[in-house]
Length: 110
Image (cartoon, rainbow, N blue to C red; front, side, top):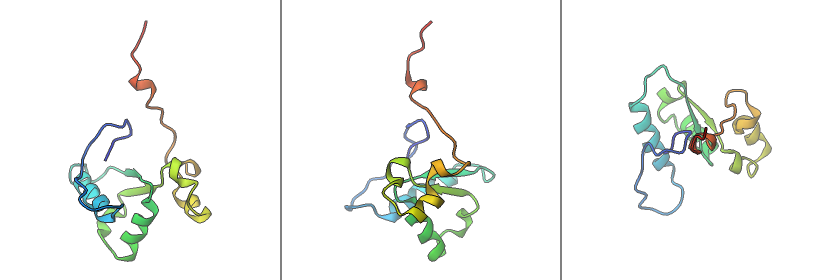
């Protein structure tokens, strides 16, 4: 799990193949334990739509629902169905905005 500046926050040891949702649930749970309850967490993940739907369908961690906004990372969003893109594509929502972290990594010159 990375922050928006691509710095690692949490790391999970994945011992099974494939993208299993329980890895994402464990990382989200660890993150939310360390954050103030009044913060909004925006989560970009290539299968965030599936994670969000699973949380709703199976009523997993209902306390997360008012705290997290889900989005599919732009690179993966165009591979998803149009209805998914309407809900989860970060460029189709005013909530997300743009971020350019490459400038912060460049050495400052005078």
